[in-house]
Image 1 (cartoon, rainbow over the protein chains, first blue to last red):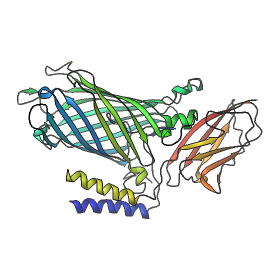
Image 2 (image 1 turned 120 degrees about the vertical axis):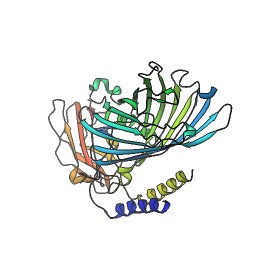
Image 3 (image 1 turned 180 degrees about the vertical axis):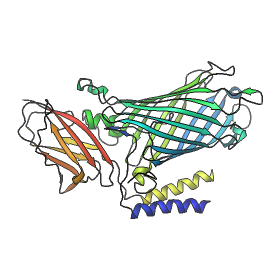
Image 4 (image 1 turned 90 degrees about the vertical axis):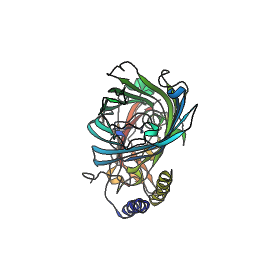
Length: 305
Length: 121
């Protein structure tokens, strides 16, 4: 397997050195560049790769358990508007009393289709489906034995179309998603598995946009590539006696976006005691495959010429 | 964790192999400055990008307050710096001008944007 992976990357590198054809960008709507957000999925169909995403928070399980996760996600475009996505995470659960356990979570497979983009208004809308494949992870870390299907609607909107009089507000943008997580099994060992409304929002203030579209305030590298943001991630059970038991986090943080990759870090603040009692964190290194490999894996499989 | 270690090694190898790659072109800085005020009448607009540009597929246009294009239509790359574009301007009156740019970086990524500057007396 190791040799196959090595051969795959060598092939990518060879394609890069030999190819001369064109490529498409990602995370853009008109003049607006949207970074990949850490805690909520963004609306863009893209060639991108996150490795690693590291998070840690103390959950209320078993009187307080530190949940530390290392995950990786990859998205590749089939066409300029349609991609497929895969994700996997390694979880370590360390209860305050008892022995720590670790293992892989269920494999996540998804797809997204971007059906609307308006450059003038810096707007984009897409639909997607994510499936957590039941039984592919470790029961030790609570990986479900059933699958969960989550169809969702994703959107992004920059405020660059506001009047010049509101120039300092124009670097703001919002992305978000609305989805419903639908489990394939109603209960497991007597515990109900409710469907849940999934909501996610990110409010971003792009210093990149400020510097190049609004006003050069004299920021230079690396500060001219910063995007402060706040993400909100909520899960609201809808049925099976769990209605109203909402959980979620508010995550203020910052992203630095470079030529080929971005790095980001956020505090993870639980909104209630059901989610946790302490502030956690999430950090991510995220690669732009379309910039790293514009002539091979960084371009759509079809329709990219 | 060996799986993660292997992937990290492959990623470093691939990054080294892609070291010649280019990326999306953003504005590094401009003259007149983005959103700036100038007292001396500018004779041209200059935009420094973060990547080398394909001048044949790139353009800068300048519009006055009424939306009329007023530049000389001669967008060109600097002979000594492929990431720098020039555009000549006629004599400008006091007022606000909008610069609209669209560029193709040498790896064919397209980016675009606009900004304003003011000429004051």
